[in-house]
Length: 418
Ligand code: PMP
Image 1 (cartoon, rainbow, N blue to C red):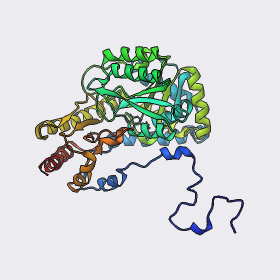
Image 2: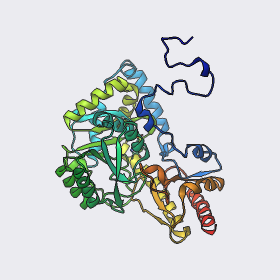
Image 3: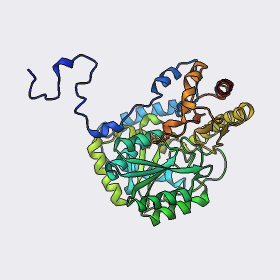
Image 4: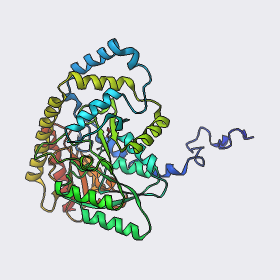
């Protein structure tokens, strides 16, 4: 007989492959789906495959001995604090340092308005948790960061895309989307944007468009969620001030140490208007009680004892060479009809195949030819992006990048001959 204390447990299926809890999951889990290309990525991580797929920073270029010394010092000198619980808003001294990092990009912020998060990914989760009810509209660029789409979907948002071109989001398209929604009697909760060195598109929102985008959002009462993990990784051209620097009351700004230091510490942050920040802290408390005090103190000591600005310059020199290796190989080898973006920073190039080709369908052949990329479809909530792919140049060496592009060209030419 079934145990009444375990109403959803079916003894007949225990030990089988059928999930006995299938009727118990919350409706929101329907939005939590595994990437269709996950299986291919397992193959793509084999050593003989040149992976232009992952967005992993090259942490082997970090001063590992120095970081080891810092870890030791934190335990030896501050162990009683570092190994204790901390607050959900994050270490106040680290938050002061985060303000110094943001000042590099012309953001004037108070440490009180910063909340430390578990990577900027947790900030995306908290902001969505605080603002989005099932069915609420979230506007984002087309394409956009895949895990942001997954987060919005996990909260059952209605994710709608706004067109981009080589200068970032198109202001007229944003205005049109908002006007259309107003006519439907609906309002978006926020506009999610990655203005610098976009993941996956590789483009940067032009300086002259930033005021226009902010003006449109302000007029429609729309909050902006500005995600800027790559802003300091600029290889060419002049820095463009973040949206937050121009509109502190209308923007929630997200930053991260994942690309400028290491993703392994899992430290990012959100800078938000005070009332919003207070809600985010409450949401963070229920999500995880306290941050890793230890990780925060290691990063804090790294920032005070290490020339971190120099370290970022070293990263930028390395990534610039890799970006040039990729663009050089694409220029030299890609067949006519293929187009790609030319990023001034960050990690990614967005490539569009000749008419009629399908990047997702091509992926098994590419892996067979020992090269991997991310098909464009994953970067849309809708069924777009079939002709596109994201190529990343952050992790492989220049030689591997050139070889990867050579292999990719072979695959594309093979497809066009079919
Ligand atoms: N936003 C964007 C645009 C990203 O590319 C990434 C990392 N790939 C993140 C957020 C999350 O980064 P993290 O959680 O490591 O800070």
